[in-house]
Length: 309
Ligand code: 48N
Image (cartoon, rainbow, N blue to C red):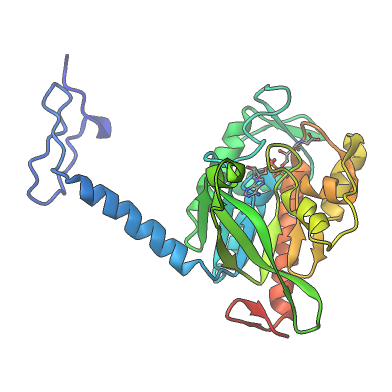
């Protein structure tokens, strides 16, 4: 087999310091030497430093679906100084935005949310009142890569929020002041053995975008009810695209002090309609949640991750 060389056939300048490496695909490929412990320590050092450093974050976003990721990207653009920590239960972030509807790949985004696609540089076909991205994964992978490239954003996937931290604040009000986390496999298996206690991340602003579907959908809305901060769930209503999308965007808000809802979790909290396979409202709701969060920082006095005035 003729040797395959990368870099358009130009031999890549070898910048590796005196390692006996060889990038020859003709049976002579050689890597630099490695010890297993070097790999382990490279991961452990970075991941647990991150956990230590983000034990107090500025914003925690629960859920890396289309709403949570749109929020993260906007907020990171608006506030590069904020420590934004995304907690995603699935190993694979992206939520329900890897496909359009009924497992079909094209993604519909109604105008004016197409402006967000242009900001991201995602191509689409213009159908007049809406646009179509040829594959939902093109949108989600592009958004995900741009969010993860932000220096102030950290994502912990395969990690679940299994409770909320709720304090009495300086006004004597119940305020969500952080999240309680565990590895998702642990969070889903508490009944299989004795107690496996969680960890915590405190933050003055929590944005919950846990969707309406899946094993932990609408998590925070349900926890507000079981924790006595909300009488009952509104429960998502039947599908009505025209009504559902503006309702979700316009009702994106801080539902209790410290906790903002975005995306489809709102439909369960408020009892609004579902919209089915159209994603403009997720993008716009995430964007609005970023602005609501920004407003909280502009109007609050925050000391060591707590709102004190
Ligand atoms: O994609 P989803 O489920 O949620 P959204 O709100 O970002 O987007 C919803 C959208 O995909 C639709 O459902 C469309 C528009 N259809 C509407 C309709 O009418 O059918 O993402 C939520 C993410 C997922 O990745 C979950 O794994 C994650 O949140 N998640 C959690 N992560 C951490 N801790 C939790 N407790 C948790 N619960 C859910």
